Length: 162
Image 1 (tube, helix red, strand yellow):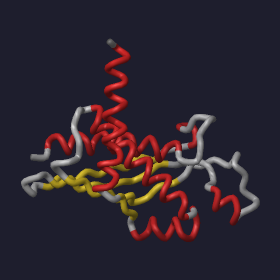
Image 2 (spheres, one colour):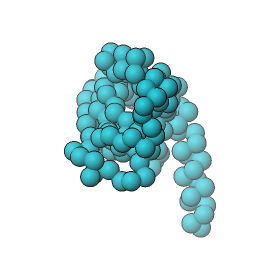
Image 3 (cartoon, helix red, strand yellow):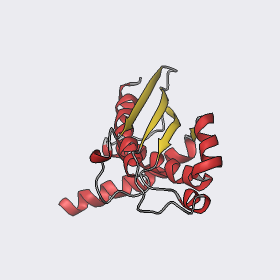
Image 4 (cartoon, helix red, strand yellow):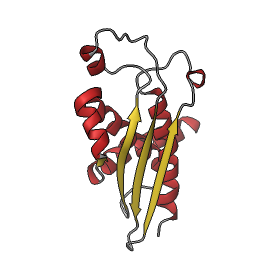
């Protein structure tokens, strides 16, 4: 019985992510777009976009809803990696993947209900110090944590928006 529920949940998630991703683009603030182009690498924008799309789809699926009756517009305002990105390693050979920094992200969403009602969702989370970061941090560890927390807020707003 438990396996059947897990498989059903996985099936819902598999179908929820593509539908939401196709109907709702994830954009970048002008400042973050510039950071992607000049420092972090454009490829990293796609990594973060996929993380946002997947996290929101997962939260909506977990609640048993799909994003068919409302629209969700997401903007990644800013994101800082915990480790250098591939582009940063190429541009600054003195950096190594052992380099570590305080990471996190700031995101914003507008949830529009079927009746036109809107709800704004914002979330910002960054480490306060390197002591907050685990030793096994990857490039976007703290940004992904912020994205997961943001996705919970977005799903809550989606359910509450008529």
